[in-house]
Length: 90
Image (cartoon, rainbow, N blue to C red; front, side, top):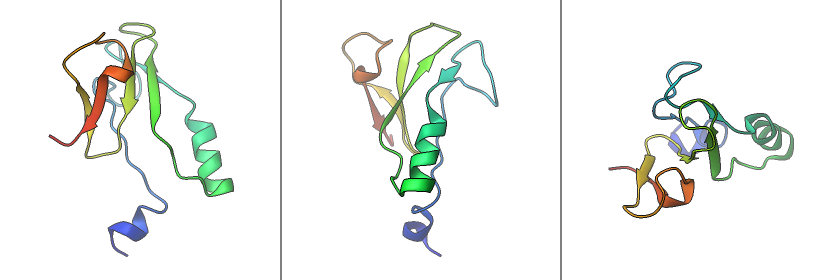
């Protein structure tokens, strides 16, 4: 099929510190269902998303980065705010 064809219907995201289902380090919360419904029902591919921590540091946010990228701190600003991170590959 090729990578471009697969990208039309598959996205893979990893959340650092999340583990398999629930974590005390970073328990991510976001509206994944609406994103999935928009993609399947309206053909709107997932936009850039922000996840919020509900366990380790409640209210802490991070960008949800599509694999193989990951959230990298930009070097300044509050480390608990997603705006201070960029999805990076290295």
